Image (cartoon, rainbow, N blue to C red):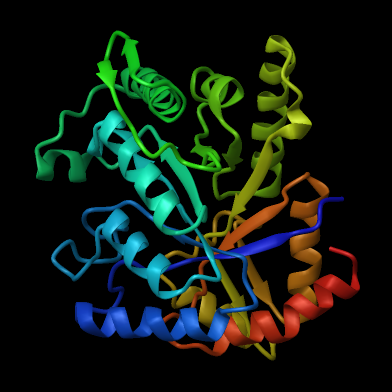
Length: 319
């Protein structure tokens, strides 16, 4: 059983119409209170609020600007992107951005990438939105471009979608940031994960669904002779709602825009002891790191109950 590490998937957009300045202050207070308890902070990549429960005109923050600001303000955390929409940034430019961030943060970056999925954002911001197969092939080439930029001097790459010629990326990132890919497609996307990812971020969903994705990924790793065990596997929870009673926890979860009642296991809902048993299932799958959204954000009650009551119980249980 893997020992679980935890990170906070920070809020980057208002869920109640509050101002950007209020959101900034709420995030800062969470980061202060969680400091020393959680290992990582994860920043999602949406240019507008992404759920059907929120309004596109509500205040939201861009991913990379947000990450660099908070990484400078809170040097004890590792910071990751979960996950960047590949189409939003040139991969060569992204490689340079990541190398600079890695240097300035002292090596605390985890570079999460995905093929992109939110068509409305693409259309609103003027990005082409090709079919899923094309986006996945672009993602694979982007990873190759980034690795070339990080390891070659100068770097060149000629692919079907991206080309660079004699590009310099100095200083090189040291150490190289792990590249995490978030994907779920079993025909194409998980093959890219097997070939290219250092970390794999499993999709939020039922335990059975996560198990299936891992089984398919392991099969692809076996096909190319890659040791599946060397890949870090991370899990995503749509919401975590911990309260003194199960009824109160359920009410907290149902008030969250991210709670998915049709996906049991995608959220952790209950008393502290219940959370331990639910999280044990992820460790049993070989997941070693979980990023969490606290259902009652911007309140701190759920977050503090998790770090002060759930985490000690997990460690006592050897999880």
